[in-house]
Image 1 (cartoon, one colour):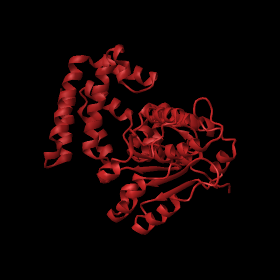
Image 2 (tube, helix red, strand yellow):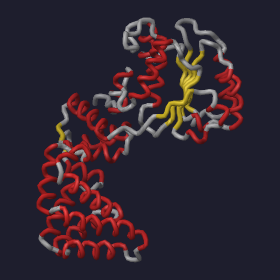
Image 3 (cartoon, one colour):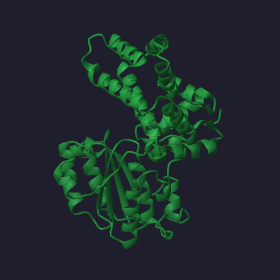
Image 4 (cartoon, helix red, strand yellow):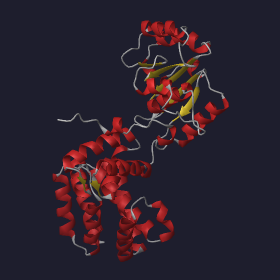
Length: 362
């Protein structure tokens, strides 16, 4: 069996240009390299799986490249770039503070720092999950971080910036990584799917992006899982089934039932939703969001507020037109009120069923 490489590793960005959704970071770093105004220490902070360690590695490779491009990207051809790509660079050191968080680990690192690089311009030290360092380790690191040799660069990465002691923060340039936009994740998933020969529905990739909540690594892990489950044919229905998410068809069907004042169909659909193990709070939140989307779809000028494909937008617009604005506003008010009061309900299932009865009887 051929060795499988997960998408998060296989398609890991190797240049600033290929980093997804962090242009404010990559542009600043490239400008610093171009002008030669590189800080001694950087702190990359933000949610998991958004590119912190990836950008650290790209920065480390680029500043030692002997022939960078005009756009300040590594050439990937010089000896330094080749050794870095082959993971044999003597100028790059990565420490996982989650498992090496003691004072002895930092003292060993401090001793390495004062040995000049044999080749290349900089020695780069990346400390991942730096917030896991003990107080004693932070204190041992402080002097080195304050007055490092000119050839030493430190890149600290963390998901919990608030746990970094102020004396460390004050000695670093802080870069705040943001959650990646759904559309950026979808575009990246489309690229990978095309490369891997995977067929997909746009709505399926949108489910993956929504599930990831701004984390590209999470999205890629979910993508690999779904490719295996669907045998390379990602449909919205199959993906929703595997991820235990409610697809949009559920809400379209419910609104059709409301329009027909069909209480029985609405109740039976909710019975199926409960049987599949969905949380009532998530269901009401999804229904409220659906009503909001229908109101947005009433006016084409608000198209950009609805992050769906043109085909899906047309479907929203058709159902919205069939309902009309007064009915949609009433639906939205009812579901919003139910969402607000759900937490205090004694019998939560009965509470949702009563809300559905009111919406269908409307």
